[in-house]
Picture 1 (spheres, one colour):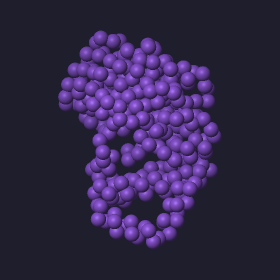
Picture 2 (cartoon, helix red, strand yellow):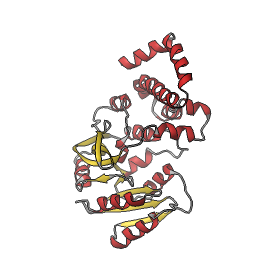
Picture 3 (cartoon, helix red, strand yellow):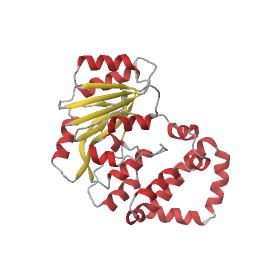
Picture 4 (cartoon, helix red, strand yellow):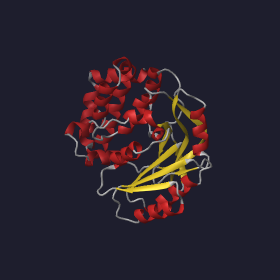
Length: 294
């Protein structure tokens, strides 16, 4: 009934904890497909050991590193069950995560995905709750607008999804910053999101500046580094029906500016100060206020 796809590269000791957490789920009817992205640590041995002790575990080893996004795609495209969820190697689930979220999906034919509340932790200590798991059960336009008001950490990506709907929502394109937001946006064309109202998933909190560092090290064109959400904006304009774009246009303006500012603050603070002075006296300021008000 369910495939759990676990893409991993150099998972180390955290991988074994994640695998144990998944295999201890109260719901038992699933396949755990681990895809090792050509790791050079103990990951292959951990995967082999898990497969030997539990018949629900299958694992693949890539001959070369195909990139994180393609590894995510690999486990999804090789799933053949009605439901699918991704799992990260450094996350941990309460034993009822699958049971409770799957029950919500089975009881709601209009829902395309279900996620519990999510807590982020560092060194085993909870530091904050995700702001991106609340239910989205209105019209497509309202759900898109609600999502882009605060996409936050995109924890929805780790929901239990209807497999075929998720496959349709993962376009075969080169990866880019915030591609997870694009996938979630496209799933909202398929149905709505429901939420189990208690924390059943614990994720590892990212280090400060992690995403800006990733953008800087990316080989994408210069404009996409200065304005990291440019590729996302282009893909949304290309793939969302035009009737929905007007509901998220001002949010995209605001999010593009916020990510640009974050990148500049980290790597070009002097240039940002000059830019902020220009911004103060330009028409962009009025546009931003209008976007915030909407």
